[in-house]
Image (tube, rainbow, N blue to C red; front, side, top):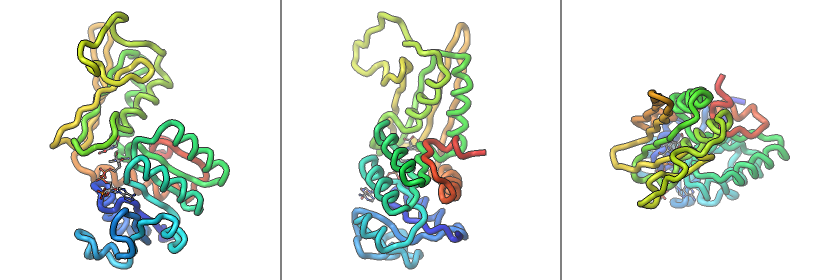
Length: 267
Ligand SMILES: NC(=O)C1=CN([C@@H]2O[C@H](COP(=O)(O)OP(=O)(O)OC[C@H]3O[C@@H](n4cnc5c(N)ncnc54)[C@H](OP(=O)(O)O)[C@@H]3O)[C@@H](O)[C@H]2O)C=CC1
Ligand SMILES: O=C(O)C1=N[C@H](C(=O)O)C[C@H](O)C1
């Protein structure tokens, strides 16, 4: 079983490079290959920033990679379109995906769940690997039982491609499970500037802030007569996500079902 053999897709990225550090510094993990859209046929050690990492070939074609390298888990930290293709292809080769990439549609998630069911394989899609963020979502779900008026404000660095964030969508979905359905705000409210009220999920509003200097932050604001409650989480650097990636990898190898959200695997 050990070491767990891992492929990382997106190794040069902000998250992927942290994942390379995690995997290569963890005794029972082994980085067996990287998938990138550049540097085909080269070794990771030939790429700037990875000179100390030996014996890790880079593939630009996932089929080629999975045919040539024996792996247990694929960690994907790329972009939504690429991430979906990678997750489906990994399952085709009986490799279990751990996907941090956000921006998957409901249909994407349903399709992956279906494949996992058919193949009896595990797959973890985690919109946020930070334990504090998972708690922020759970606390928000608890609060929503008592406060049905809620606004989600997510704040990220300005290089982020998707809006709203995967975490904000997941938070809204978790709140929807317990919240009495309602359309918030005044019934006659009108936006005089389009987008002023943000995006809408089941009548609750999600606002996306993008600024240089930010990493990943979210606050969930609840309001009721004469009071407000704010649940907030901040990631100040990407190391904050790595303990969640580690747990996900360790869990998925023994798992035969599809999981969406780290809260479903934490004890
Ligand atoms: N679940 C979680 O806890 C977290 C999730 N995320 C999510 O992870 C994803 C990555 O984020 P981040 O690291 O900030 O983004 P980056 O843009 O820094 O990294 C993405 C990497 O993927 C590479 N890439 C693009 N296309 C391909 C491809 N076809 N094959 C392999 N690699 C490819 C990019 O290369 P190039 O730059 O050359 O295009 C880049 O190196 C996003 O979806 C983000 O929302 C982020 C933080 C935490
Ligand atoms: O792109 C990011 O940076 C992040 N993406 C994830 C999301 O969309 O929720 C997780 C975290 O917020 C950082």
